Image (cartoon, rainbow, N blue to C red; front, side, top):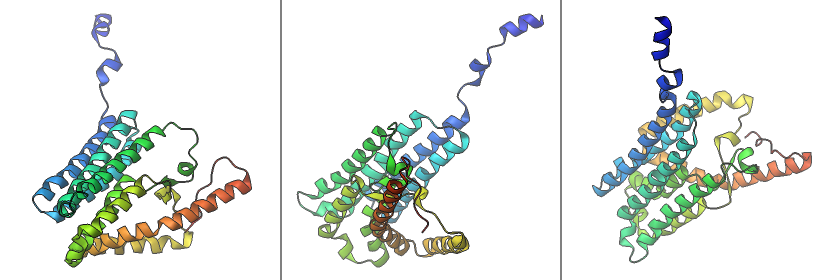
Length: 270
């Protein structure tokens, strides 16, 4: 009788199904996509604060999905492709439509073209990233640097005029003659070959750990109490960091050439 029951029992592989650890990261990615796309709905209704907040929420979720996947050991090629598609919509299409409705629609003939450049450059950046996933030689990635600014940072810097407008109420920041060149510049930075900082390239000296924690606390306090001036400062500071990233990566390359190593070491502590 026991042998008969064991024959009827399905094999272990047939009972398992899809583990939750493989679904959870993709669910976070889809939440980021929905948050980013919701920004378009808020922009159509002239709810600019909610529109910006939706893009920021998408950026937070986009930063979490990869960490959730690594924590649960749920990484997959499907998840990587879904993440790229989500980034194109949340940080490429949605900010482009949002900036167009906010300012660029008042620029005759060229407003929509400039808005499209942001979405197109975001898509090109992510296509380049996907094409290089399996590449053996990626010296910048090994050193902890990005090539060009990543899609979430591209959306954030493109929206800097909106941050300044919400912070000051000055219509100067809404002028399409200011917004158009700014949007074109940030779009080109996404597809540029400039090295930019990633979290992996940043190192703190041991004596700075306590100060860094205090700085994080002050930053979040400012973000809660003065969100728009804080976000404006963050966007400008990020763009100002690009020359320092270029210099830091140049030092890494010099160190590699001096040591004759094929794998670049991480960047020097700040």
